[in-house]
Image 1 (cartoon, rainbow, N blue to C red):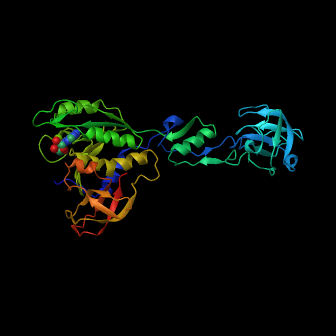
Image 2 (cartoon, rainbow, N blue to C red):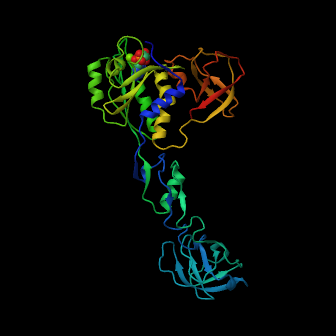
Length: 396
Ligand code: AMP
Ligand code: MG
């Protein structure tokens, strides 16, 4: 019986269904970048927490400097960090630094540039209106209000804000632990000599980098040869949220992943895409296993189309999809009937023209490395004339 054939969208849903939602764990801010907040964050303090000076200068009562030029005795010195600030007596000034608490009774700050910077007495050259150079309590954030919503992807500004309201850690969905395993008796680790008939193993580093880029934790295992018992032994020892394999899933002989895991919880199917048609997925003794074809571009594209959105969704990302646009293709394209074709391409910075890079074949990794987008050719389309507007998936 022929293998089941899925559309890309159907198979994407199959993979998403295998990757469990990650649990919520309190995580130190330093490890939260790129993770997704699972609960609203309510500020326990206001920002600023107290009225303070926006300038280095002198805290005064505006009415005392209304007739400037004027000289006032300097009754106190308030650097940032002082916690025991005394009230300002009428007719005096306190020297004050940026961020230091405003003394009770003061209603303005004269910036140091409008003074002689005196420490015993200060000569003030110009008047200032009440409220000048003050930062008011709660002006930025009011205590008790939500500052970050559940579902927010935590980037540098959000993490800075969390720290500013005093959070040491945040409730986020934890990073998925992904184990990456390449198969193939021809594979040799980079950095070692290559004999005729062998190739350098490149899928694991690519997939692991892609996992880490979206915030996952990747562990790469040493590639296993096309040996079913050896492969099964490695799989049995894997402790992860997801195991990703590459190679050994298509229709030839020595298809180690297919031979080892058929009837052990993994279904091997065809997806109507080019490249990357043969795919496997399922659960082996409770371990979700996603089996990609071995050709480097097929493996990379499989990650992009199926596992990337599944991992992002498991991490709670509200939008697991890449941004898309439409642009005019600079050369004619052909595509097989009945398959969605993904062509490596380069989109110009104005997003007007898209230039195909290399052919559609799945071993052409250099053209993938030179691409910044994919052209998506619908299943029913077999020919695209030059200049046609096409769907573009942005990769960067
Ligand atoms: P397979 O899916 O095992 O039939 O492999 C398809 C093609 O991809 C073959 O030319 C393999 O040599 C190549 N290939 C498989 N795995 C890798 C890998 N990890 N790194 C680089 N090339 C690979
Ligand atoms: Mg192989």
